[in-house]
Length: 131
Image (cartoon, rainbow, N blue to C red):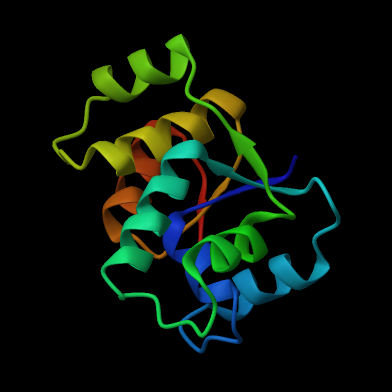
C-alpha cells in the first residue's frame, strides 16, 4: 500500500477532473493494483453524495460506487483507528475527516487530499498530505 485517498479524490478520479492536481493525477495514473486505499468511511460519504445527486453520473448509484472503488483497498475501522480519531488533538470536528486522518496515520500512509485543514494538521502531526 502506498497512498490513502480522501473521499473527494475518489469522486474526482472517476472522470478526468481538472480539480485533481498534476501530482495526484500522476500518482493515480501510475498506481498498480494494491497501491491505493480508502477508509471505509469514504464509502458512506460517497453513497451520501450519490443520494444527494452531488455526484453526477449516468450510472445507478451501486454501479458507480462499485466502479469507483473496485480497484481500491478498503481499510475498516479498528479499535486503534477509532481511538486515534477520537483523541486527535485537532479542533476540526468533522468525524469523517478525523476517521480518514486516523486511518492514514494508523497505516503510515500519505493522504491524497486537497483539504487545507488536513494539510495543516499533517505539518503539525507528522502525517504526510499530498496535493
